[in-house]
Length: 130
Image (cartoon, rainbow, N blue to C red):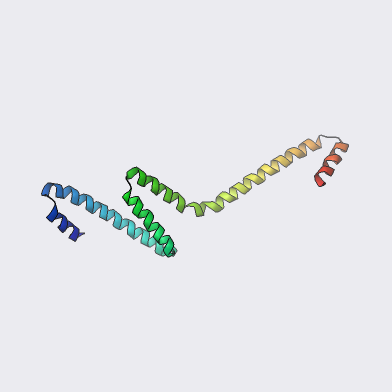
C-alpha cells in the first residue's frame, strides 16, 4: 500500500492526488478485507480448487461491474451459496404439506362415504380395492 501511495504521488498533481489516493486506498483496504474473509472461509470448509476458482471469478466480476449490477451479482451469489442449507428443509416442508393435503382429501372422501347407505359403502370399498 505504501509503494502504491509513493507511485501515485509522483504521477498525480497535489489536489487530485489526495482524493484519488484516498479512494484507491479505501478500495484496496476493502479488497484486502474481502480476500482475508474468503481465505478463512475456504480454509475452514476445505473447498476444492475448482470451487475456489469459481469463487474468485465471482468476486472479480463483482468488483468490475458497476454498483447496481454488482449488487445483483452479489445477491445471486449469496442465494446460490445458501441453497444447500435450505434444500433439505424445503423438501421436508413440501412433504409435510403434501401429506396433510392427501390426508385432508382422504378424510373428505371418508366423510362422504359415511353418509351413504350400506350398499353404496360396500360398492365404494370394492372400487378402492380393484
